[in-house]
Image (cartoon, rainbow, N blue to C red; front, top):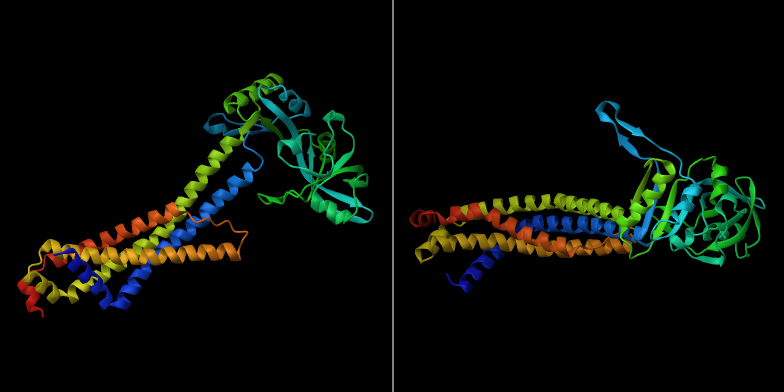
Length: 399
């Protein structure tokens, strides 16, 4: 059978049963659209999370108090939490390649100013906090460079707090009450917006020693470390551990480089994207069952046509290819429709819900198209073999 005859027979067969063809292709289209839509959300979430973390830079290390150790199955996990101190942060500034080591403690506190009062997120930090996290001051200055253990009662306001308390007035030099104590406002931060669900504009920054006293805490929550971008992260990590072990007498802390966190997040988010793609792929299997059913019916209905084709010289191989071609063409038509449908829904979601991270992954879209064609081919094998094995004389008698 020549190529032109093959195409004409395949296309003509599908066209002669338009409703059946459309419904079968729809099953594949829904599967492709589901894969594209789900992976677009997964890929968008991946890029969103990575972008949220990397906006502060990738040359960061977090040191937190405590280390979980396992001492046998019967004893389970023993938590060896010991305090991290401001002195620890000062000592870490001397570690190799370290540029900034800034202490951090966080909590909630009531802010009051001339009859206005509200509860905000309060950060107790050192003078290098804004620099290490690439945050900028809009007005005034950040906490001054002085001994963090005996810092003065200064406060820096987030842009939202400054706007709600002072409106268009200049807040610099004003006295506010933070947790019952008086602080002088020396700066207002530029708007930073939401970062992983935290509103950095609805915050107040005060010296870390005063925050520890206000929250009645012995230990810092974290020490943020910024190191030279070209420095090997393993060398930085070892330098931090060496200093803290010398101070504490044991490794009773956890060192987490930002790069390792990003690698873990990337692996987890890639796995989630693949999982949702597999869930969408179930619809492709359903579409393949539809193709199998339709072609099985088609073989029964077209027995006489198959006998006539064999009588005029078509071989078993020709008949096999004819039905396999119909199966693949059905899958390709459905795949193309699903591609347009999935892409269209993804674009509509971006417009209607701009806060929802959606990014079409063309790699998964191409993979879904290839899988759709493979599903169509696999679904067409049994009906095609049955058609090819029909006896020509028996087929003609069924007319």
